[in-house]
Structures are given as structure tokens and as C-alpha cells.
Image (tube, rainbow, N blue to C red; front, side, top):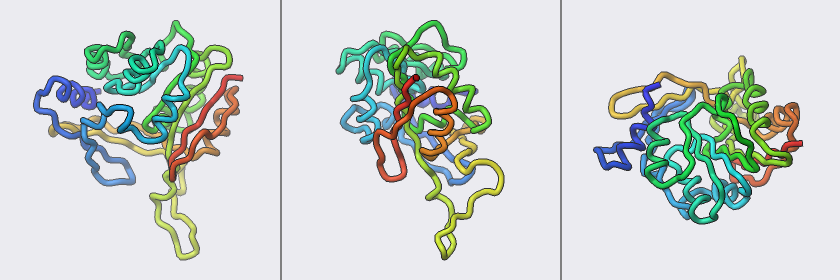
Length: 234
């Protein structure tokens, strides 16, 4: 991993010629991701993010923390015990420089030693699951990181709208695999990461997987094709 996302975050924080990131998926063309978006304040976050942060309670783990904007809000504004976790070392260095007291550079599958009341997975949090073939591995790991009656707040988008429709309203989707399993590539300053697997889930598919792994689940909020779900440890 070249850690291009982390490099962009680092460059922006240190004002070292930051440039916008470029992202693409196996079903979409190149798109710009302004790096300053990763440093946004609470008022600039979308409704789903704001709802998730308001519902967060107790001891919290923010998985995929990035530049730490969610963690900073919870730590500084709500005075909660928050740990920022990200696989990107440079992102975690910036989290620490921004004042996050607990920030860990680690793959969530290898992270251990603590249990939490709330786990946050935002900005298409289901992406980290990669594929339906391994989603159980991630859900079992998340289950092990929760205290009794702990909650996971996770968002995703049903991307069925991105596929072509016929005259009768039917949708042309790939014959093999689940339509939300995409290859995702990040580009920055002329460099490209190797494509990673990234998973978008419709709510019913997430519901089935969550219930099969010992969770109660409810949809907390719907915003167009995106939603926020709450998984409660049984």
C-alpha cells in the first residue's frame, strides 16, 4: 500500500502542495475527491454522519478515521472517550497532530485488547467488508470488539441506481457476484494505488449478514439511496 490517501491528508495538514484525490471504481469513471472534504467540521457533514455522531455513546471506536474529523467532534465537542483507527499510518499521524488523544494505525482485523460501547463505520462503512464472501469475518471481529449491548453505527448506499434500466424498469446487473462488490482505485499526484475491493450494500443484504452473526439490526435513517444502520450485539 502506497498510502496515497494518507499522503494527501498529510500534505493538506502541512500545506505541502496538497492536491485533490482522484477515485474510480469498476463501474464509474474518474471522480475528484477534494482533500479538504476530509477535514470538514460537523456542520459540513451530511445528515447521516451527523445522526451517527449524535447517537454515539460510551467508549467509541472510529474505524477508518481518516483525518479524524468524526473523532475530533466526539472528543472535543461531546467529551467522549474515542479511539481513532485507520490502516493509514500518515492519516493516524495527522489525527495525533490534530489533537486526537487515542489514534492507532492498524488493520481492524488485527486490532484487539479493548471493547467498546459504540463502533463507527462511516463514509460507506460497509466498504471495509470488501466482499460478501468475507463479510462474516469482519462482522465476527466487530462483534468481539463490542461490550454487551454495544452498538455499531454503519452507513452504506444501495448502488442499484447506477445500473442501466430497460423499458419495463428492469435493471441490467452483472450475472456473477453481488452488484455492490466493486474494485476501487485511488490516484494522487500521478501515483495510483493497487485496486482494492470495496463493498456497497443494500440494507436487506446487510440485515441478513448481521443477523447471521449475532446482531439485532435496524435502519436508523434513509437519505435517498443511502442509509444509516444500527447493529446491536445480542
